[in-house]
Image (cartoon, rainbow, N blue to C red):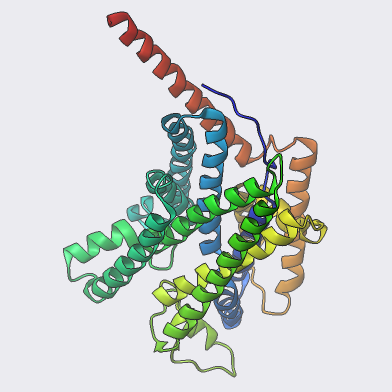
Length: 410
C-alpha cells in the first residue's frame, strides 16, 4: 500500500455552505408545517414553492458530490479501489441503520403512519439508499453517469404517470408505490437518485478543479483548464434551468405536496393549477433543481474556494453544513417542545417570525459550542465517522486473516 502526499484542503467551503443552506431551508419549512395554524398555511406553501430548488434535492446532490470527492481523496491514500469501496460502504451501512431507527421512532411517535412507515422515503433513507446504489457507479465515466441521470428521470416520469391512476386498484402499482414512492410527498428514490448522480459527477469535477488549483507547480495551462471547466458547468447549469422552465411552462394539477389548496388559503389567491416546473416530482422541476444546484455550486466554489473570499457572511450556513445531521435530529426536539408546554400551541404568519429567529439562534449556539468546546466530538457526524471507521478496520482485519489463511493453505 503506497501513501501519497496530501495536496488538498481538508474541506471545500462551497460544499459545507450548500449543505447548510439546504438544512436552513428545511428547518424553515418544518417550522411552518409544525407551528402555523390552518388559516396561515399559505405561508408554508409559498415558501416551499419558492425555495425548494435548494432544499432536500440540493442536500441529496451535495451528498453525491461529497461521496465522490471523498472517494477520490481516499484513493490518493489507499491506492486500492476495492479497499476504498469498503471504506465508503462502511459509512453507508451506518446510515442505513440510522435511517431505519429514525423510521421506527417515527412510527412510535405517529401511529397513523402504520407499519409501512418502516420503509419511508425521508431524507435519511433516501441518502442511505442513494449511497448504496451510487457506490457501484462512482468509477464509471462522467458520460455514463450523466446518461443514467436522464434515464432515471425518464423511468420515474413514466412510472409515476402509469402508477398514480392505478393505486388501490392494482397490486403491481401498490407494490411499486410502496418500494419507490412511499410517500409521494417525500424524498422518493427514483427522482432523487438523479440528483445524487449529478452530484457524483460534480464530485469528480470539483476534485479535478482542486487538483489544478493546488498542484505543487501551478502552471498557466492549469489555470486555463480551471477556467474552462468552471465556465462549461456554469453554462450547463443555466441550460438545465432554462430547459426545465421551457418544457415546464404548461399548467398541471399534479400536486403531491398539496401546495395549491394551501396557497388558496390566502384571501387574495385562487389557483387551480401551477406550472409544471414548480410541481415537485415532475421531470421539469428536476431539471430546474439541477440547474440551480450547478449555478449555486460553481458560484460559491469560485468565490470561496478559488478567490478565497471571506466566509464570514456565510458563517451560519457553514456551521449548519458542518453539523447538518446533528441539526436535523435536534431541530425536531425544538419543534415539538412548544406542544409539551401547551397542546394548543399555534402561530400565525406574523408572530411566527420572531420565534423562527430564536430557534435559528438556539441551533447556531448549540452547534457552535459543539464545534468549539468538543471539536465536534459530541455530534452525530462524529458518531458516524467513528463507527464507520471501526467497521472499516474490522473489515480490514478480516481480510488480513483471510489472506493469511489462504497463504497457509498454499
